[in-house]
Image (cartoon, rainbow, N blue to C red; front, side, top):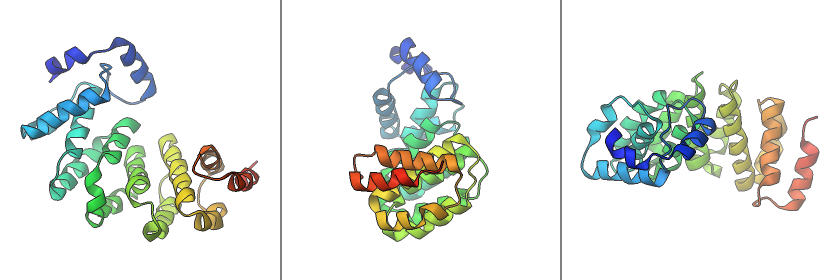
Length: 221
């Protein structure tokens, strides 16, 4: 695989990526579109053995992630996601896995058990996985109370969890303004996360100016 990746080495992008993604393995600087193409080819050729290999570079981790997202069998995808979640070491792996995992939309009842499994974790990226899953696939009226319960009870003492919470609350505001405005002040989140969520809401073009005036007044000083 390293030989296949050599043509995509980009030193400038490598330096940028290593700074942008704390906790990742060394980056070659390959672009996401190329990693996705390689992953799709591996899946097309039934090269699941790649998922059992040790990965030396960030790009190999990302190919691993993208391969899982191209699998069309829900049970197999579930198994492979469950196996990879404890191996996630940075926000890019987490978010690219979850956001590209389109199979969840058609199998929410299956994948929600993964959220149950990891929602009580004390590991940063296992909790972020849960929160980004909620943001990407379960942020609707049906799951509103479920999401609130997880927000109130999950481990929060890590930067990338706090950021995920802020994005999740912003999306909840966009999709269910009345409900989130009613409970925002009562959520079990610290002032930094609360204010970051307000900031994301104010920056969103999907929230109207009248609501942004109210949100500015709700900031904690």
